[in-house]
Image (tube, rainbow, N blue to C red; front, side, top):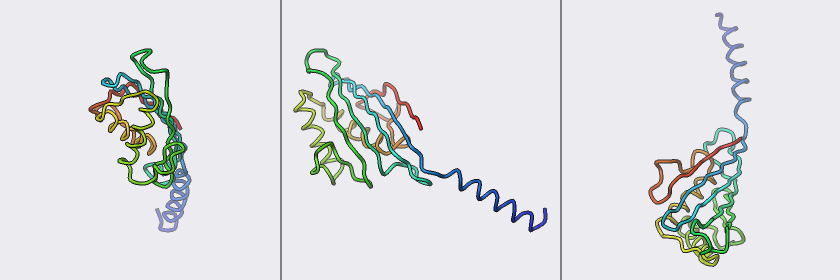
Length: 159
């Protein structure tokens, strides 16, 4: 191949490859079991992973707790969280910004207690980690073998 042909081929290849690197919409649904708290926790997150990035910096998640012990709790309870420029916010809690995960743990625990749930500290800590993970996208989501206190029931990813 002559130098001029090589340059043309390289230019075409570079243009084709650059077209493959666009922003990606991600949708993650993860279901975890908190056996000591006797709850199932479903996390549904949507976000954007920017071109050439591995993880999302802008996403939202709905975390829904469901008691497995029947009438002990009135019913499912949901918490919304968002990741904006690396900062996690819980629902209408503007004070939850900052010091993640410590501040997030306080807010999460208070909201769950108000709803009638009594989360076990080890499970709560891992649920915070799982929440942050699904906000980051597929590469941050806790999978089987990556949890100690929780059991991974299922994880699905869509684009």
